[in-house]
Length: 293
Image (cartoon, rainbow, N blue to C red; front, side, top):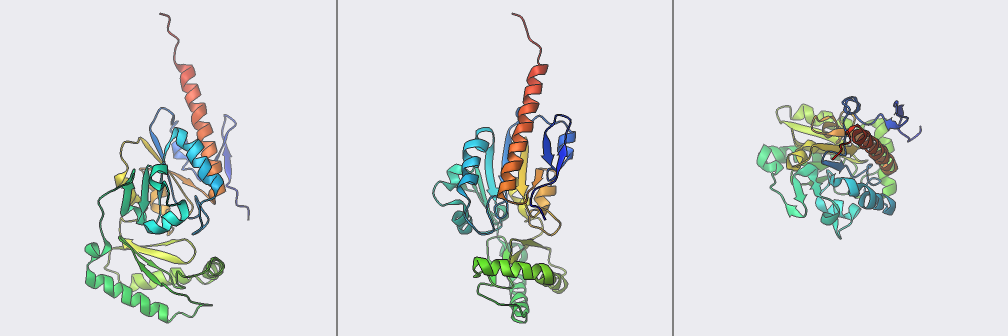
């Protein structure tokens, strides 16, 4: 199957990816006259899963995209993992906002913003019941292999990995293929929903080996409450289908969603977006009547 996105041809001979929510274009939006921010998922959007950002991707963001838009990132991982992928040095200078753990840990130009915790939301007893059940469930799973760190406690969520987060890159890919065929993570989530029907929790599959558990409303849309002063927020993500950890923010009325398939596709969609915006701005300027003084 090709990794290239399907496209639609418009009357002005520019193609746009169907990953963009099409109602945005039907509205005839003219972007250059508005203050815009581009918000990026990390794994699968700016980087390969759990890998460092490639130099050409970072260069394009910082030297091309940033000329016209502010840029920000949002990930489900903790801040240390985001730094491993996007770099420690100058992270807060490169990106206007940095959102770790879906925005439960949030920075605006390097300043830490107010936060909440999962234990304060659901209570310590319920949290321990959830952890204990998950560990028992994992102990009874028979997989091709298991490693370590099956549950990672984060500020606003639990990250649960049936196979263990201490996988090599090759083992991650092997489990991912196994999971596609055997639906290990999806079955685990169904078991949790059945065991804890009264807990208002969201279960979100992301990456290759794990899924996140967090209070309802604490998906990636949580970060949007921190973004102020923009007329449009363009979100780019790969896991936009139902159950994916980009789904809610992609579908949100507060964003213009762009579905991507890889870092290369992200760059392509940004180029298309900037071309369309430039054309729209030029048409606007042509409509302005000339005045004689």
